[in-house]
Amino acid sequence: MASDNAVLCPSAQPEWDGAQVIGVVAGTPEQPEMAYLNTPQPVTEQVLAMAGPLTPAEVFRFSAPCACSGCGHFAAEESKCRLAEKVVRFTPSVTEQLPVCAIRADCRWWNQEGKAACFRCPQVVTNNLKPSDEMRRAADYGVI
Image: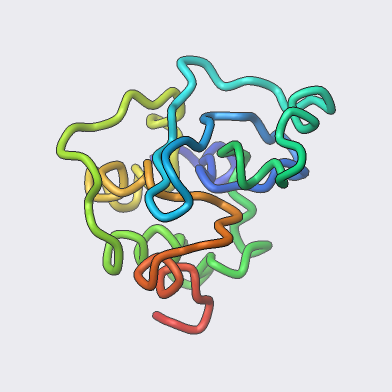
């Protein structure tokens, strides 16, 4: 795995340093499905405005360098992302093939959880207003 400074979070916020757009959320609110971009795109005001009237993190998926201990999902003592761990534990696979992903080599979720994370990744919406019970449980900071 790359050093923590080079590892990318695949569920970042657009305002994080180094953020880039890695996909567009498609599907339905009940069954979102990310359409991965072939090449990550820079976050610009023009791109963020395209999300309106929704928030950018409801429409796009962003990656950015992992915030490590600056993120509530990060377990510093184990140097791992608990969100990735819980997405794998609590949510179903939505594909049987690895999605085409431009950040896989540097993705914290891939490096930590392997294929199991990738099989679930397309259903992740960073700001999901209608999460499934499984996704709500995975995103809950209090659940380990």
